[in-house]
Length: 234
Image 1 (cartoon, helix red, strand yellow):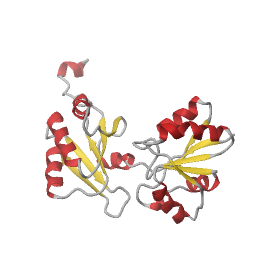
Image 2 (cartoon, one colour):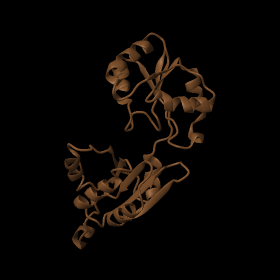
Image 3 (tube, one colour):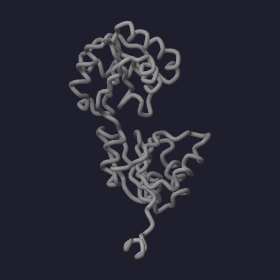
Image 4 (cartoon, helix red, strand yellow):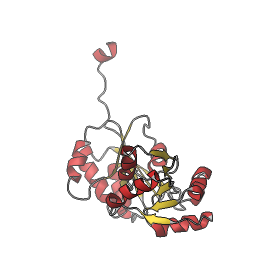
């Protein structure tokens, strides 16, 4: 039976692609790419020649049904995004849901995603965390941040270099300037960097140092109140 393959691609370092991902891209009938120009660079590096079609947030509603029909007709299809795992702050969810509802098989390969290394190297608890991805740029942004004020899990945000200082400032307004956080940028790339400190310290750092690259912001959860002696006895 033909299926949809979700294939993660490197977020920076091309050596991070898996052997299984390479084999899958070689064997499918065609590839759906968020940006065919970006994916063509990767395919050229891998020595793969394959028919590609665009599949992005502006056309996924129109193309998902057609792709599902192609899979139902016996064609194996791979979905890739520009970087990382499709569906994680990238197109993919709608197509996967369409295939699942049609009773078609979906196989998701493990692979690169930016928030995992950023979370692990932040030094904050990784056993429970809250992934928020990109917050709304305008409508609903403040409401979403306010709703996280009492969150006690580690929180993860994606942000562009143009809005990262604004995000840190908004978080500080709601959660306090002394809340601990970690900011990673350019993960797996030549100028990869992680800066840790309070929100106030991070605001100061990235105000003085022009933010460049793609950012992952990790914020510690709200500290739990100290237990009383009576609670400890219980």
